[in-house]
Image (cartoon, rainbow, N blue to C red):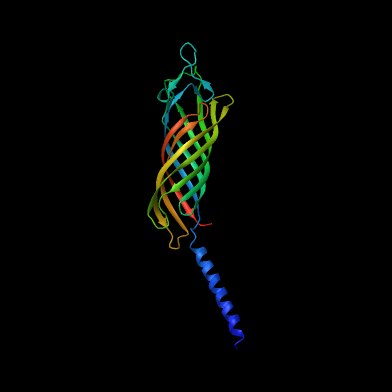
Length: 219
């Protein structure tokens, strides 16, 4: 009987060690997946000498540069994305976004009709300042890379496109609308805003003010 006590003690110590390790693992910040549908109001800014694949010219057909207000009208964007919230604060996501490029009505296209659009793959790294598990809302701030095609589509003819990339600053906030009792999923209303700080070529740059619905769930 006495010989069995050391073995029982070792087993007990092993169970305590395993239990402590399991408790430590349970205390590690949980990881959430995120699905988002969003839309926004796109306000153009900057100066341009090209619209899509078309060079902007004056009445004498000489290339000129114009402010964004003289080239574009405000427009809209639509997008979907998927991401993961890690350590309760770091949100990594990627998705697709379409921006309608709306030329100013004063521009003359020589009697032709054109449609323009920006089609992007977005990659974002955002920091959530508060823990959405325990808080009703959280502001966020981050960086985004937008890589895609600026498409010029003359009606009745083949479309043309140019590859372009932009670096964006993201900012906004999430407000919790619903969460389940076990903390495995929740829905937030998000303010989804971005500002194209830098862009390649003559890709249109926008300040986008928008909103989205985010569904968060544990994989």
